[in-house]
Length: 114
Image 1 (cartoon, rainbow, N blue to C red):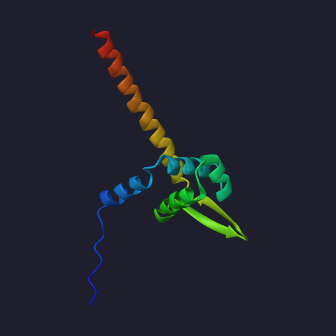
Image 2: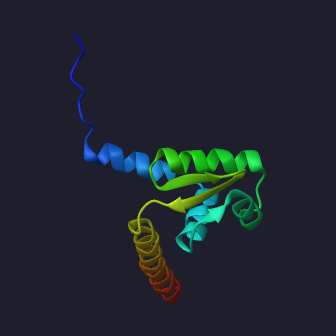
Image 3: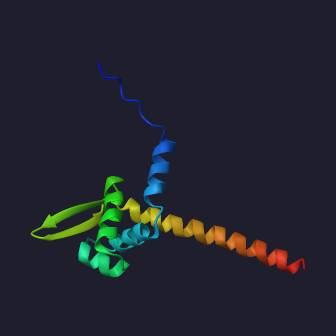
């Protein structure tokens, strides 16, 4: 008899999502796909990596459910799976701006103490 599948905690799933986003090429690919569906050749040219490397990064994103692909004849195109990916990237940008602003103000305060 098969063991019942134990669902993983949400924080584990979140960690897996963040791991799938942990490379600059994957972030750049998502930024490009937020603008619209693109063929692999266009992504390769825009990102500036070898086709084999891009393929690996696209597979990570696809496995995580962030992107989907479609083949028409011999052209494979990719697209984001949900508009929330665009919202997520925008939120990440806001978080970075806020934390960098805090870091900058801390540095300015430290420099004024000298």
